[in-house]
Length: 315
Ligand code: UT7
Image (cartoon, rainbow, N blue to C red; front, side):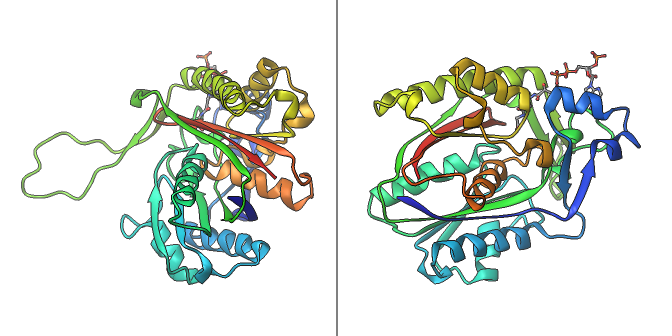
């Protein structure tokens, strides 16, 4: 497959670190030094499905494809206002996609899980034109009195259209199941028969553990994936790494011994937008003309599960 088009959409409301310090015991200094985040876009009056649809249309326009050209549509999402149908169905109705579609919930590395699936469909000859949309609103998962989580996230949607080509060189998905490190639960509708304890808990995270997992999973997977196709780090043009924390990105960069200019980032402006993060960054870099034909892009992402994944794409 080949990436034919990219798109992204951010909510209009921008919340700065100083805005947060007005109602939380935090500071611009703490958030900037510990995470690299200066501001984030959060949903106010937008609907996530509208942002997802707009991101998809932008990617389709760049690809020169119509919604009805798509053979498969995979949507990565953790939560949205619909329990059913899938966000993929809601978006399909909005933009006129008519192929089989479904949601995956693979948390922050959702784009790379979707890419891995898309690659498998393509190689099996079951789909040629594939739409992937990653749309997440982690701001709606946090307790906004909990300074250890709510300062980290921003909302957004990203999309790619994939078509015929041989540019997806390698993908690998992984898990180290450990629910306790990053989780959220919700209470479902009651019934006359429910007699078990259920909890409505906003996002809980053991930050230091997730940090260590992120650095170790990413570095191991990037090295192994490059090795699996006989590539060296010198062949890599850019690393598109999940934008969770600037210190995680720096640790990966230092471990690999790669220069800063190979690691484009937007975490300062957007925070962590879960599975949308890699696609928003990809689209921003693409639209400002950063990538040249044949540049090698290495993707790496990690998050709740604990899940992680990597991919290598020739531009
Ligand atoms: O996309 C999903 C994947 N998620 C991640 O990759 C997140 C990975 N983890 C991290 O990015 C970092 O662990 C955090 C940014 C979440 C936290 O940074 P840290 O350096 O690990 O800080 P910490 O949790 O050890 O907290 C240090 C101190 C604590 O105070 P005490 O106990 O030392 O007195 C916290 O209570 O910082 C305090 N703290 C804050 N202070 C001001 C925590 N959050 C804040 C805050 N403002 N927002």
